[in-house]
Amino acid sequence: MSAENDIRDLLGRYEMSLNRSDPELSAACYTRDGVFMPTRLPTIAGAEMREGYARIFEKIRLNVEFRIQELVIASNDLAFALTQSQGTQTVLATAEESVESNREMFVFRSDEAAWKIARYMFNKAE
Image (cartoon, rainbow, N blue to C red):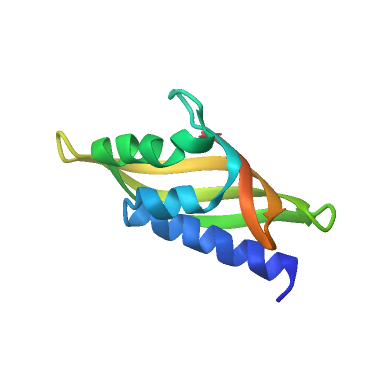
């Protein structure tokens, strides 16, 4: 498989982890020292990744789809992607559903012969 296909597969697994509210799978998509910088929430890094996603999934349910806008393989072990996601978010406490639309930037690193998310941040597309 090519690096591009591996990264596309990784983004598919990450999307699935969000839509299934699966903190184990979400954390497994990151490098050991990965960093997640969500909008309006504290940064989550490294060993805190699984617990950070668990806290998020206790509050919301997502149904999103990522579309890759740009994917660049910079070297044998470094790549980045710009994506847009679209879908819905449901606040579990109130069952209120809203449109979820973001722009994302992913930095990937090949870690132990597999591509993983090294850095991820997003903001609202509006």
